[in-house]
Amino acid sequence: MRMVIGSLLIGLVLAVPNLQAGGPGEPFMLSNGCINCHGFEGQRAPGAIPSLAGQSEAYLYKTLAAYRDGTLKGTIMNRAMEGYDDQTLRQFAKYYSSLPRKSLGSAVPKAHEQGERLYAQHCSSCHEKQADTPYVKGQNSQYLQGVLKDMATGHRTMPEEMASAISALKGEELQQLLGYLQGCAQKALCR
Amino acid sequence: MNSQRRLLLKWLATGIGASSIQALARPAVPVAARSYAVVVIGGGFAGATFARTLRRLDTSTSITLVEPSRQYHCCPLGVEYLVGKREEETLVFGYEQLHAEGIEVVHQKARSIDAKRKQVNLADGSVLSYDRCVVATGIGYKYDSSAGYNEAVASRVPHAWGGGQQLRLLRQQLEAMPNGGNVLISVPVDDYRCPPGPYERASLIADYLKTHKPDSRVIILDAKPRFAKQAQFEQAWKRFYGYGSEQANIQWIGALQGGTVQGFDEAKGQLLTEGGAVSGQVINIIAPQRADDFSQYNGLAAEHGWCPVNTQTLESLLVPDVHVIGDAAYAEKLPKSAFAATCQARVCALAIHSQMHGLALLKPQYMNVCYSLCGDNYGISVLLHYEHDASRNIIEIQTLRVTPLDASDEDYRREALSAYSMFDSLVKEAFG
Ligand SMILES: Cc1cc2nc3c(=O)[nH]c(=O)nc-3n(C[C@H](O)[C@H](O)[C@H](O)COP(=O)(O)OP(=O)(O)OC[C@H]3O[C@@H](n4cnc5c(N)ncnc54)[C@H](O)[C@@H]3O)c2cc1C
Image 1 (cartoon, chains in turn cyan, orange):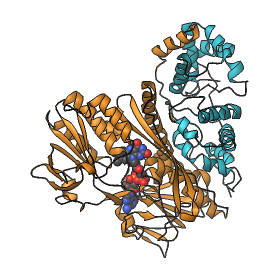
Image 2 (tube, chains in turn cyan, brown; image 1 turned 180 degrees about the vertical axis):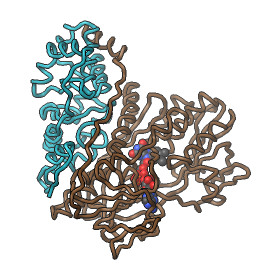
Image 3 (spheres, each protein chain N blue to C red; image 1 turned 45 degrees about the horizontal axis):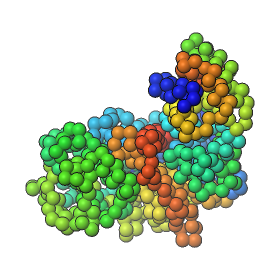
Image 4 (cartoon, rainbow over the protein chains, first blue to last red; image 1 turned 90 degrees about the horizontal axis):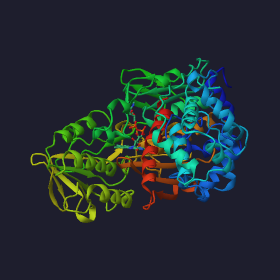
């Protein structure tokens, strides 16, 4: 039935291959309301709301459950997750983790080389290799700033590894690092 | 506070500058042999989101969108334009992306549906055949609702409940009003588009008056005894606009206090309410509403003025093979919001996709979120969860949760940021 399609659509068609009840169409229907903020592809324009596509299943489940249980305080997310059972949260987590991340370009411009080095040195061992840790390259910077502010003001737990990674950084290094992460959201800025 | 936290706070104070990220250019979908034909009438939030969702589900379907305007003027965040905080261009969207994705966009007005022949007749005389027709034509106004008010009056005394010219006119009138004048907003009973909209409008007008016309007041004359997010709005009004005091820049007169508007005296500039005549220099009558003219004239609307639908598929209960989505639909108990309209659009796209391929229908899922801005860096929201009840054809409200009254300033700030962020994604989903 499906014809040759543009490259963008391939991921989607794979993500929504058939819509039988009990099949992969169900999480798409389940996430109907989520789409208005997080996007059909789990990716969105910059802003206070994060993209979800390609985050690890473990991280997504942990975070959604924490919103539901109130152990993580957000604004609307606590209300949005209210009433969902574990099974549904797992479906959300599985679905969004299966959606492809925005492809990142391969060239890092000079301005971000130092940031990239810092990222590799201090961050990537958790943020790219540990299952229940968020992937932060290319994430919306306004959202990341909110999370960091919550950690800084004690409204969100800062994991010990992160606290020690941050204390190893100088002020301007943190700037470079975050500039690099933000740069990753831009086309062809990041590998 | 430990050193990492201090470092973070310091960095957060500096910021790293906003980025402007170019939307990824999307490749056009090659036109293959088209089998199934879907005609969508109306390219607002509902129609545009429907067309793009179905395109993503079914690359082989022929999708034609009929919309008279080349540019869509949206309502959400229009209030910021009204009070001079936003450029009008940021509220205007085109259909280029839909076209690039292989959706045929025809800039014509649809005149009628021939349900027997399964054809739509357009204003220029052309005819489109369909397997399924999806009507998403929005709202119309009951201009005969109060004495002294009619469509001609509305061209001078704007409802401004759609974007574009009406909103521009209200803005000009607000700007021209001398300090000390009153702004009157007449609010109808339910159902109307965007239940918290009048109060968001009043909030930002009060904010504008406070700065530019401090002796002026916005007075809401309401045909309802209470309203959406009332406690949250009133809390913000007290905090910012002296609500409840003599000097307040905002006042609300509910139905129980005689606020229901029964007539309009244009010569005197007065709204005639149950409690007596109220004078205003700027008058905004938000007329009572119904489904738009197209659905009325094509047998889609019931006596109450809205289009009854099967809440699982959004199929019209009155005309076969036609679906109605968005504000025009009577999909109880969803409100008339862009958020709910786009949820309906996706349920409808999934239903048509399933029917087309002989698949079982999925249980429909709906949600609604409405953000309202009450002032600078201050937003509130309501979130509703629903449960579909097939036996009663009702989308029943499961929970309704509003921003807590003891939220922190940071929470209100983030809700305002989220309002902008959600606007961006609603628009991106609809128009690309
Ligand atoms: C002041 C205000 C603030 C709002 N704020 C929010 C908000 O913050 N969040 C939110 O979710 N919602 C908000 N809304 C509600 C939102 O604007 C509507 O719910 C939404 O626009 C409904 O979408 P729709 O596609 O059904 O109708 P519309 O957006 O009205 O689109 C209908 C389209 O159909 C076309 N049409 C009409 N007749 C024909 C015909 N005969 N042939 C072809 N095309 C035709 C029209 O040109 C139009 O483009 C607000 C509304 C207002 C008034």
